[in-house]
Length: 118
Image 1 (cartoon, helix red, strand yellow):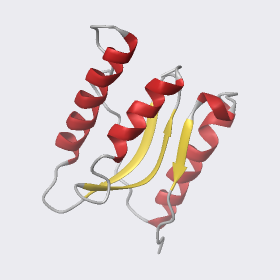
Image 2 (cartoon, helix red, strand yellow; image 1 turned 135 degrees about the vertical axis):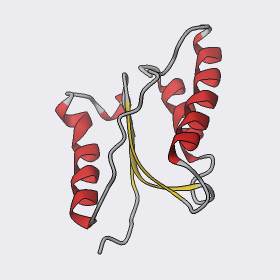
Image 3 (cartoon, helix red, strand yellow; image 1 turned 180 degrees about the vertical axis):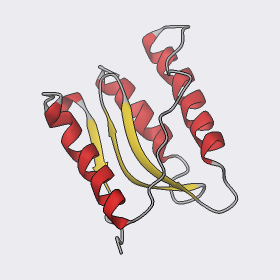
């Protein structure tokens, strides 16, 4: 995801079912990993959602890169957001992650959505 076109493809895949199968509260697509706060809508399972996002984005990105290899790690590191305080902490972590890594704005894609935190 070091290339802007690859990051853009991952972002398109993340947003494809936003507001339908899930709601995205925040994400950052960095050169070597992604962080996302995602809330499945009723009737949708997080593991199935992630499998879909990862599968489609891997196929599309591998075409861009002309690779036929593993694009994503098999495991995701899931955390349950239990309250508004944790949601703020995760959003803050996502927002600061590129700066912490020393990246310039052209090196990552970041979205922080306005969400009601109670």
